[in-house]
Amino acid sequence: MSKLPPALAARLAKRGLIKNETDKPKQSEVLHEEVIAEDYDDSDTNKFEILESKPLCETVIGCPNKSNIYHNCTDYCAKKYADVSLKPTKILRRQFQILLERFPLKDSVWEQIYEPGLKTFYFWNTVTDQVSWLPPSHPDAKISLPAEKLRSNLRIFL
Image 1: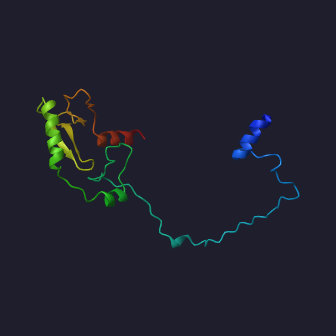
Image 2: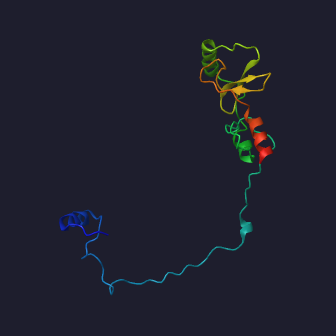
Image 3: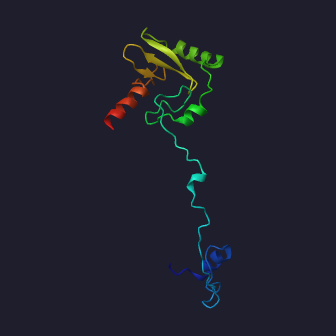
């Protein structure tokens, strides 16, 4: 550490940011304690049930992470997201009706489908099997393959 001017060192010591040389304990005053660490735990590991989340074969309907291609639904998802409303609320229907009035589905191949896990709608092309969170006529729409197909393609390459 570099040598500080005495006035600065005094102010920093007053604030407790550095120690004064006078505050340093002498070698003889320092007590040496011996620390003994012991393991008091029982070696019986069967006392606790080990919970392993095994991936399920299918995605859980109410799981909000199923649109993530790296997520595989587990028992936790099945328990946590089992009780989800399969029908959209009136407010959500009205919001998407306004969205469709502004950006209508021009092709008859696009369908509006409710996603209960995320509590929103998505748009599905029945011919090409592509999906979009926004109507395809929306300027910010990103049309892609569904997460289930991307997930299966990812498993093929891994």
